[in-house]
Image (cartoon, rainbow, N blue to C red; front, side, top):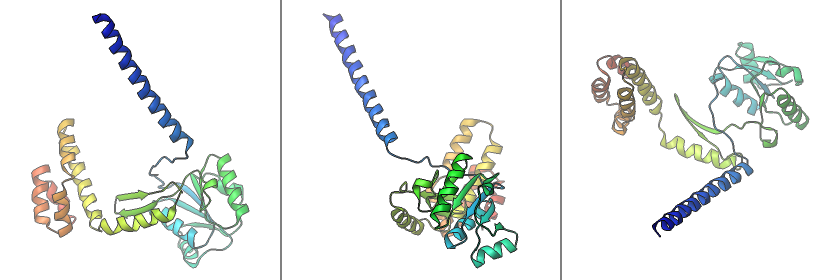
Length: 253
């Protein structure tokens, strides 16, 4: 009798486990059936990026790429005054001509910001054949990546995306977040980054390093930085990292 009960309990647990696995598999199938994007941040420093188009949208894309350290090649018969000035100053390489497939040679990614549908499709097909990431503005069917709305404060970067479903909502959320994430966050994040490097250099024990690094994200310290209470910040930093922290804090006073 006891053996039968144990067998029944085992079978019940097994059935529950199988049902749980079925739920997980079904959930994964649903996610796979819908188009979802994998979020990531790209290191484009000293990497060739092609921008096709020379209007206002292309100008904004170029400015963002330059801030990431990309080597920008602009392909467009015409360009805004700002883009022309950038080319004259050597900030970008402007090819004043119509796009051809060879323009993508050696590129890491391409952004098409032109309203010419034939050029849009050509850029996408060539990028696809050369395994180059491609974004055709406002044409998700011609995109292998999309660009989220961004809130940036120094090294702090918040990305908001609806997966292309409603860019207007992402823009509204960006504005709301931008109002709540003050400018001081730039200094705050840089300060924590400096202290974190000091902790890593000064502590060989991984457990101690982890505990100290976790203690950096203290909301009280964030309030001190926001209010400019640097004496308190310095005292806290020294207690955590030693006297070397004084020089790090001095950079933000």
